[in-house]
Image (cartoon, rainbow, N blue to C red; front, side, top):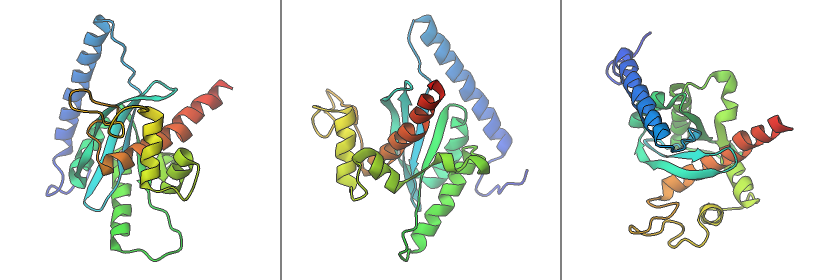
Length: 212
């Protein structure tokens, strides 16, 4: 294997660190089982890619609906790239994809496309399975708002109506009484839209198809 030591650490170090994390997860699962706690282990890591930083969420679902947000945030692309191998086999990985609508685009769009490819590769997504793990913005609008004309505010409201009806501050709640979307920022909202659309159109729809 060839790798650039200036940007990436020795891959054998990654392997050792992943082994430690796997053992830690196994120990956590064993403790949860001994206490009678239910662990779903059905997770989706969704990415809203950018040129230098990307928003992400990790959500957990029970096969019928997303039940909680495990983690969310916005980090440098290089940092996210290094983290992705640790999530292979634990989370399904999905990334928002750039689409062409016939208008001229700038350098940032092409740089984002490069990062999308790198994220998929780091997440262990094989070329012949890439399309399944891509979510387009138009799909998010159609899935969540049933309209291609929906904007960011419409998408956020659709997410709040679905997961945090009646919770104050757009589902964020308060520090004393956190809501479903506690701590969410603009980038986390976008990544959440990717996760929900992937769940609805890939995970849930495939499960329905298998049961028929």
